[in-house]
Amino acid sequence: MDENVFFREATLRLCGHLDIEKGLRECIKYLEHFMPADSLWLARFELELGTVRVVARATTTESGMHNVLVPLADDGKMAMANFRSALLDHTLPDVFVGNTPESEPVSRTVQTFFHLPLSSVMSLPLFIDGHPMGFLALFAEGNDRFTEKHSHLFHLLKEPFFVAMSNTLKHREVLDLKNLLADDNRYLRGELQRLSGDEIVGASFGLKGVMHKVQQVASLDSPVLLLGETGVGKDVIANAIHLSSPRRDKPFIRVNCGAIPETLIDSELFGHEKGAFTGALSQKRGLFERANRGTILLDEIGDLPLQAQVRLLRVLQNSEIERVGGSDIIKLDIRVLAATHRDLKAMVSSELFREDLWFRLNVFPILIPPVRERRSDVPALLQHFINLKARELKLPAIPKISPGTIDSLLEYNWPGNVREIQNVVERSLILNPKGPLTFDYMNLRKSLVSQDQPEQFNSTDKLDDVVHRHIQAVLSKTDGKIHGPAGAAELLGINPSTLRNRMDRLGIRYGRKGKG
Image (tube, one colour):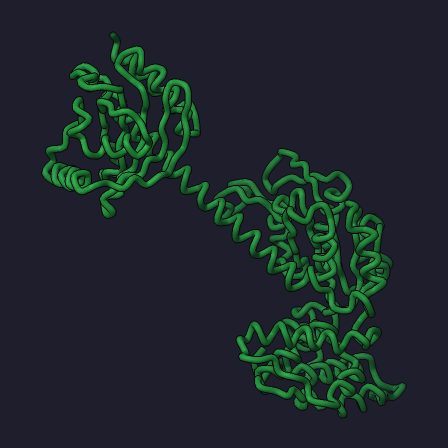
């Protein structure tokens, strides 16, 4: 027999399948033409435990994965210890041949564990990077079934079985990581639903009309444009649309269009190919690809540059993209939601936003009212965030609101909307974790007076002077904070860098305690 042909044919059968058990089955069907072969086993050493783990086994008619830990008796543990000693002494044979099953404690224990008749065995130790990882065992029922010739042929398959064992362990590791990732994903989705999707505060009162529109459009694939001031909870409504849609079990990707540098927008949204530009060391999927079969929220769509708007229009019209540096067209199945606090129609008139894109997005607009127009929701919002933040801060009990405080909070205009309520509650819990919560630091009476008596301006005031005073007033309200939630830029509805440039031009010092 030509040993090269034997090696090649056995290797092709073993390595022709991703699933190791199928490879074992095809291999033993070939081996039985040259040697006794009833079953072929792949097992892994658990040297520290003194046991073996059966990974997979196959006969000529069936195969299966096991991942079963087989406990060994004392004589089996002794045999494992002898194996380790032989390994250290470099006296380990290439193939173990056991033709008397009763005297082979490890193989005997494995066969008894699986209720199989005692059989002769040939065992081929498998190493990965010089470390013993397991063995391949060929069983044939009865005594004295294997010869030296059989052992020689079996040893020829050492290398392909090394590769098969390594690939199996890596493949199993990937599957385990995939399962862990799926578990984490399910948990995080549950948390998102608990925090924002399950409970829409005000759904039966101030947001009743909004939630009716959500129910009307959620089951469709039509684009939705969410409108409203900063901090009203547009992202929460977007999440509610996704969770109420047939895509609820697919990705929900949120993109802050105003936070991506203009030079990186194409790469972030559409991805890039390896070598597309300096620093593109590998292929990258964009956010649109990651949202495939799910929903993407384009938050602050009004901050998207005109050139990016052109490419976004193609995605909406044709449901396809091209990665930066690539030529392949990638088809997408995606639901697009957009959100903005800007007046897009006015931006279209000023040629700051493409009219065709606005028409494409404005299929089903939903206007989310500010808190001052739904004051009846304020008590529920306060209690919701008190409960939520008390858990996050690990407080032993949920503090109560001081009697009489709610009336003042109802009269306050809440310019930062729901986000301001959330921040106010967190600050109050930090200052007074045991309660009752009074919100004294907000100086509500002064705030109410200033709302009823707006600052008076002279008709001769220059525009820059008016803008200067207004920015100063907002900075005073935010304690000098410019960037981030409830910062001056957010309250003014402009980009933080734009605000800093305007402050520089008007000579306004910025930053808290002298810091930017």
